[in-house]
Figure 1 (cartoon, one colour):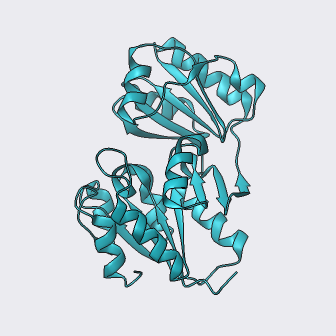
Figure 2: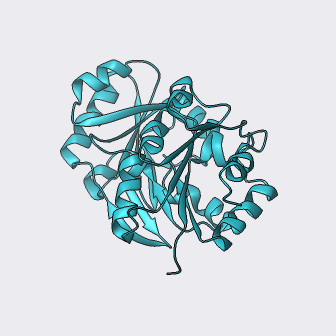
Length: 257
């Protein structure tokens, strides 16, 4: 490995991706320039590996923090993975059914949902993803890194009934669910530790509530112009929105490209 001059961690939706959930040519070129400048670009997302495969290929970014820090890859190789206990997944499934909600099951290479109802369809349309297959029992068959509560309301009830889990509402229709103590920030820490890159400058880019820990774990904290107010409050730099080349402006601000 050549001497690493920095690590840039990018959220996807509302950050690296534009309003069409796509990567612009200019952003792709900036990623290439980052790599030429010995800056490691890393995708840090709530999505699973399966959902970012195409984006990873288009950008050339093969280092990933997925499922809100539950799974970490460096150059395509696993360096960290955290699982939700199956009995906890079963209890959450039962809770969703009691509230008229559904549940999504996430592994690095597979997504299943408990049903195809209107909320489930709206969720995956909202994030521009294909509708997963139905399998109510994946938590009994596979180790799961993340769950998705598919429904509106009852956020506080879930948090009260499952203190061992962390809940992030990332869309109007769904809540990301991971182990307590897990976060994109935890993924950043595991990435840096595994590669022995302590002391190398880190840059975090984000816009949503699950990016707070990501930014806090980095030396330089960049909030997008479209970011939530709580991100802008902790940011070292607020750039323009994801619709206005905010990534490029921030990379230039820190002389990374």
